[in-house]
Length: 144
Image (tube, rainbow, N blue to C red; front, side):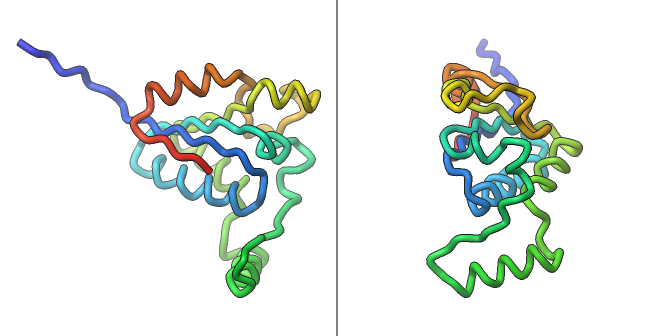
């Protein structure tokens, strides 16, 4: 007799760029997973680590795009309150579902950043082995 293990689907997202666009994409993808009760693990590397510093979250609202019309419309929607900024959306998602944000320990070390240097959205600082463990457990892996 074969007994199938029950598992909880998990989404792991790797973000490596620190632009507003990439963080917004991250938040929107995470919102879809949280909406269907899927736990989300986010691992931030490279420029995304810098983007999660306390003084940087909430200040970079520059939308960059090769399509100027898109960039202007998204900026207008953000400034007009039609779009929730990514940091508010991620905060809401943490209240609504299971979402954990970890920053890369190597990058944090290179930038001489400690846990207290990061925005309250950040849960932990850990190495890529932590990310690899999340990937091993994940049923969905997204890179941004």
